[in-house]
Length: 103
Image (spheres, rainbow, N blue to C red):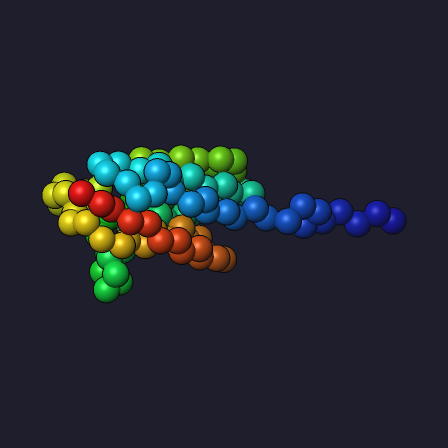
């Protein structure tokens, strides 16, 4: 009797360092998903306040994805220079990295 499992390959869930970093006026953020799932990609300021939601609980296919952040907040206003955090999250995991906006 053979038993099959869907856990043969580990689930890939990776968030790459943005580039360029530091950046102005925009930066690329890349991430990889090992399976189709709901994900969010958010930008936070140093105080932990949500600045920009790039992907808000959206169903994404497995594979590599990239998105450009244009240094604006959810209202469309340019953010000031400083350190920001970007967070990729799914139901199972979360990865956070930091980046710097320089004007």
